[in-house]
Image (cartoon, rainbow, N blue to C red; front, side, top):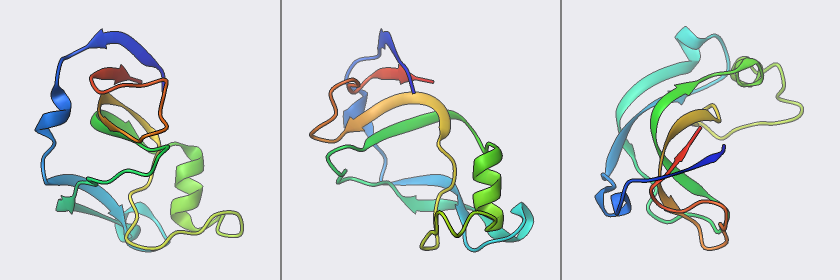
Length: 109
């Protein structure tokens, strides 16, 4: 993710308690392995290197698709439910204690 120079103020104070997310509940095709949930708890405590982003757009790329199907389970396995994907764009709403490149309010893409 790349930060932009745009900042939109004190957005970090407006983090909701729940979010909508596509959760992976097992390995397989998207129809069987993904469930859309509207009551997923938003993480409040971040690890030192984590960044919380309010997403405006997300995607599942080719590697995510292979992970979803379990085709790369020798390399990477998940505890379910799991929120797949790392490609997103949005606004940073919280950062862990060791994050230096990003700050709350940065646009990332």
